[in-house]
Structures are given as structure tokens and as C-alpha cells.
Image (cartoon, rainbow, N blue to C red; front, side, top):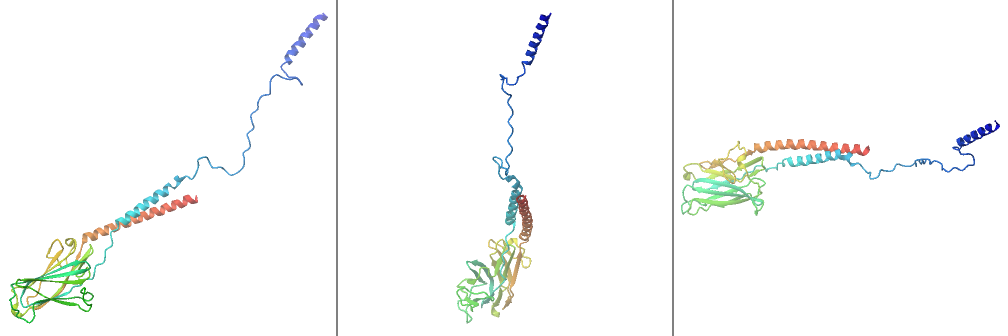
Length: 306
């Protein structure tokens, strides 16, 4: 009986020993190492923020200012191109006095004005009804004289000479031509594309009573005015136009006497209206362009201050 109890006690102790085999006793070395632990994250280092790799100024925020600026400059340049050129001033109408002294009646006088270099050429051609006799019946041959208005002068002549006579050489024919040079490029006629004028001279016709012609002499006045047909000459219409310009017809007195000077004024209404329209367009473009540039500057300042 005692043996059976001893054997049972030994078996119980053996079972307890196996149960405690899974625990490490103090001082006992185990065959397995400790389990690994996760590393503790390092504390962040204080200091100024560092820029991101590849970062920089974001120029996209200035895109709106750039667009406004470019559009404004384009509009300003367009306004400058659209604005019509300013009208150049034209000279004050000035006319000379043509004095004709003859003992044979004149049929016609052709008064031609054309600019040459820095002067104006007055070419006057006279035509008789019939040839002059071989012997001059009067004390003086036929003469043509130009009297200049105040301020005009003859190139190469002293300033105090304002009247220049020239003899008329008809020879055995019926025509004679004389040429006068007057200082200034726009004497007696001028134009600027919108306004124009032509000044017909005063004519003093002196002929003896016994040499009166069958009809009054005709004065033909020709001027070189570009695009003369585009002007409205309602004050005194030309009789005709040719390639060089307009031509006016005026009847002189049949007997000795004066024919008053006349000034023909022309206005190109089409050009005038076109200039007004383009001036309006240029003003509108100028306002839009200025507004766009100001908007670009305002937008830029907001971006810079932000």
C-alpha cells in the first residue's frame, strides 16, 4: 500500500515538472533570444522650412497680367496705326496781278501754275486773233507784267522788286509765251488732301480802243493739284480736268479794264468723313488699350503684394 502511494506521488511530481518545463526559471539560460523591438522615430529638428526639391517661383500666377499687358500693347499700336495723318496747313491764298499791254486784241491767255523745286513757275501764253504788223504802231512793244502780292518775291531779284515786266515776242505768228519764277513751292495754289485752293490772278487788260477784238479774251487758268477731281469746288467749279489738275475759264473785259481776282476753294468730303471715322476708331482702340494696360499693372501689383 505504501509502495503504491509512493509511485503515485512520483508520477505527480513528474507531471508537474513537465508542466513547469515551459517556463524559464531564474538563473536558467534559455535557448531563444528576446523578440526584436520597433525603432523609436527621431524627434523632428526645429528650424526654417526647407524648399521642396525642384521648387521655385510659380510664374503661372502672372499669366493674367501678361495677357492683359500684351493685349493692351497690341491695341495701343493699332490705335497709332489707325489714326489718320494730321492735315498739313495750306498757305493763305495769294494771287498776283497780270498786266497785259498790247496794241493788238488778244484772243486768249493761258495762265499755267506749276511748282518747280523750291519755287513756283508762272507760264503765261498769249494768243492773238491775227499776226501783228511788221512795224509797231505804238511806242512800246506788247508787254506782260506780273505784280506780286506782299510777302512774295522773285528769286534772284532784290527784295524791293515786286513787279517784273517782260516783252511779248510774237514774231510772225500769233502766240507768245513768257515765264516768271516766284519764290515758294505753294504760291497761287495749294492742297493737303482735304482742303485745296487755287487763286486766279487779277488781270489788267490794256488795249487801244481801235484794236478791240470781236469778243472778250478768254483766260484759261491751269493748276497742278493732285486728285483735283475728288474735291468739291462748289464755290467756283473748274471748266475741265486734265492729268495735271483742274482748269478754270474766265472771260476778261473786251475793252481796257480790270478783271477781279477769284479764289476757288475745294473740299474733299470723302476724305474728310474717312478721317473722322478713323479718328473715332483710333480713339476707341486707344481707350481699350489703355484700360488693358492699367488692368495688367493692377493685377501685377496684387500678385506681388500677395
